[in-house]
Image 1 (cartoon, helix red, strand yellow):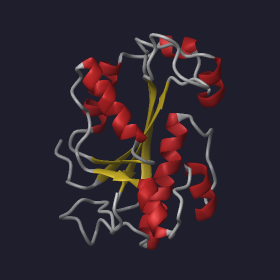
Image 2 (cartoon, rainbow, N blue to C red; image 1 turned 135 degrees about the vertical axis):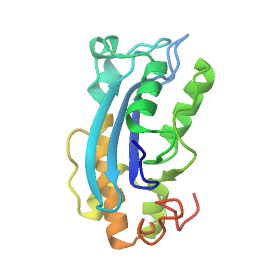
Image 3 (spheres, rainbow, N blue to C red; image 1 turned 45 degrees about the vertical axis):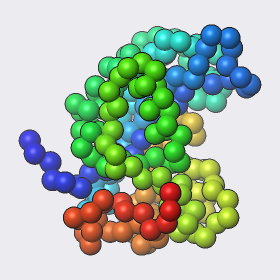
Image 4 (cartoon, rainbow, N blue to C red; image 1 turned 45 degrees about the horizontal axis):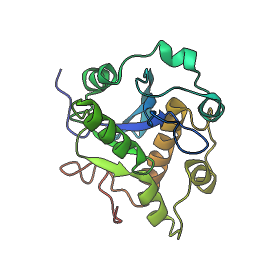
Length: 204
């Protein structure tokens, strides 16, 4: 079924293997969870959420990573490969054609790095919005806040667990709608439906 251009926005948050210091010898940061929330832009409503667990191939989930994200080594053992996760993004969430957003540029760059190293086709479109940059400009802040700090400034609750990809994507989507509703740094998709549905008003 054909989807109207600009109807939906994918809000994405990834979690990766991490350590208190540098990675152990032979290990690298790898995505272990992709959280995604679909926003219907005209109605400014979160209509779907998803969690894809990804099985790392060159690293392990340790105690520090579990404390931060809540993700255990046992959970990711039952996950899919990164290649399969990218295929699911394309097939289920039309990630190659939809605009998408994340909190900062880390998620976009981590996906790009892993696609390059694993020779996997990049699953997203080029129409990306750095919501952290938009929020910072809209509120006139000198320093870019974390997602939880931005929720507090916006008077929004933090729903779920911070650093859980599925929950973070849900909360970032709430910030997207907050900015759109108030005209703070994001154009309305109704006024600019022929353009990027989340055209930024401040530099990236």
